[in-house]
Amino acid sequence: MITINPDKLVRNVSTNGEFIYRGGLALQAELGAQNARRFGRFLTTPQGGKFLAQQILLQGQNPKEETRIYNPAAPLIAKGLSQEFTSIKPNRHIDLSGFGEAPTTEEIEGNPAAVKFFDKNTGVGGSLQVRYGGERGDLLNFPDRKNSSGQGETKDFIKFRIRDAVNGKYIIFPALLEGNISDNSSAESTPISYIGRADKVYVYGGYTRSISFSVNIVANSSLDIPIIWEKVNYAKGLVLPQYKNFNFAGRTDTTRPVAPICYLTLGDLFNDAPGMFTSVNLAIPEGSTWTLTDGRQVPHICTLAFEFTYLGKETPSMTSKHYDNISNSFPLEVEAKNKAAQDELDKLDFGEAFKQKRAELGPGKTFTWRSNSYSTNTKEDEINAAKKTEPNRRRGLFRRGR
Image (cartoon, rainbow, N blue to C red; front, side):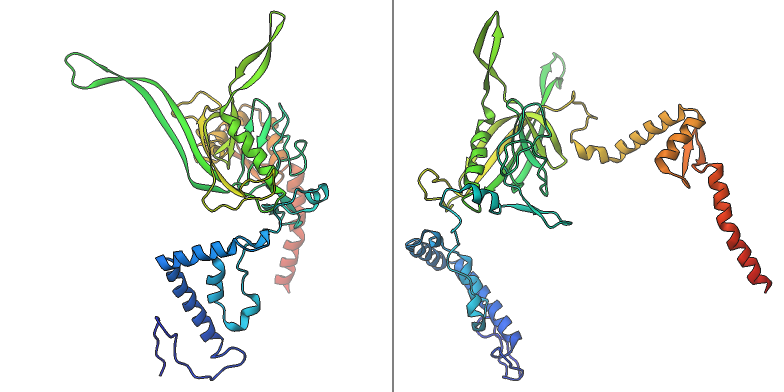
């Protein structure tokens, strides 16, 4: 009889069916799962926290720098594996052998990036951890990992970039967005009280819109360190003005500030949306690993939290497009575009309308002109179609005659 005790033993089984794994593969899998759950519960206790702290301290005393970071998942994974898999059990440390040394030109050109995308057709990868750069006056001029400008847009799963409109530079991070994305619109009004009325009259005064979001920034090799911290540096400057040269009365004045206007792209909600950043907050998580080389002693992980005041591309109203590209797919927007296109078509005479729809749809289709439906076929199309169906009709008659 099989008995189960989930706190101690998985089950009592015979050795029937043993081949390589003691008790059979099913038993080993169940034992591993139970061991992992039991050890996971232990880690949530004060004793488990003390155990992790001891392991982190001991691991940090290793003579090799790249093995000083303790891997807390290692014992949990090891508990879930049977003794037959000892050779593939995980290392106690997180391998940081890629950190520490300044990169050479050959390394920059040949080393894979921290975050990559892959073209599903060609299988060729490209880096998402691109440089700070761009050209003023050219929104389609992007940087990549090796060049500060002159490149096409780097494709990410979600579009995320900040354009410094004053200096013409892009700050592009992989879209590792953290937490909530907040989009708050608030109205301003002035209350006025009248004698003899208990209620107040409100005079509309304006509105503000602010967008809040956070992004995680991660370096996976030493090559990413100067790239990401250059972008973090310039991201911190997005709340400051830029002082420009102005010519006035034959002399140059360099003391006049220019407001830090930026363009924000976030998916298809905001596409080069103009505005300004009111807050850029850098947070370095507790326990983050750092590069230990002099001159490059910075953390590998940080978080930037942004507050963005939305200015918009048009005068705002109740029926404005409050989001960018996605607005083009709204059903009412599609209907309005279709109606506008139909109105323009109805203004043409029939010959021009037919020619336009024929070029647009091709033969064998239908279109509407002034509330009536018409085919896009010409007379020659009808004759050719009849010729193709005539032999089939004759063969059918011949079969019925036999």
